[in-house]
Image 1 (cartoon, rainbow, N blue to C red):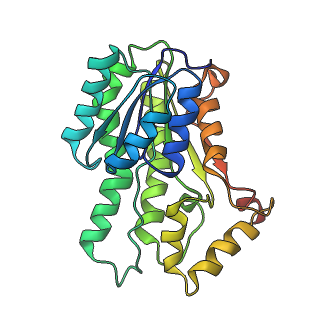
Image 2: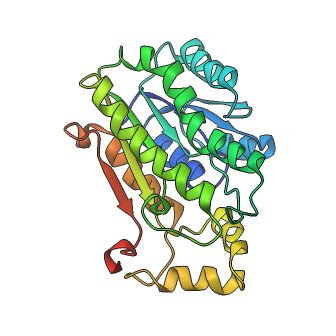
Length: 250
């Protein structure tokens, strides 16, 4: 087991990529603190995990909630070895149509929440001999999509934050960023509403990859596992696209 007895906080853990990461990391021996809003989904997930895990419902944009996640990890396990940040929202609408409140909320959930969690956890991560943070961004950091200004900008901010934090907290904490392309989760169907034909947009998203399919949440979880494990012990400040080759097409 690559993560035996290591403790991770996973945000956005009750669906999609975060859920897949919880399952993958549990299989590899990690102890988990799970964050999300859906308590029913959390109960179902907890029943499937193979290691000790706890769920704390809350809003990741709340600094106090992030502090409580860290305190729960320390209370239950006595240490903290890593973070997997997945919580996000879309904030759809063109710049001229987008309410300021939606712009602000999107940044608070997608970007500022990661700042809050890093701020609360880094003093403890620095005490771990194997600390690793994996920040889940998006190819939207590099490729623009119609009616996604807040989403694209906040995801680009995550890439910059990961690289900058890696500089400040090396060598004790490795901090890396992953940028998925279109993955078959509820999120992609919500995102497709920004297009004239949402169903066609989802279909085209898979067809436009070089491997001719949407990604699966498990594809992303396996990359996160590699980055978080000792297999990637010489990797920090890096950004990994995992998009079926979309960005290679230009």
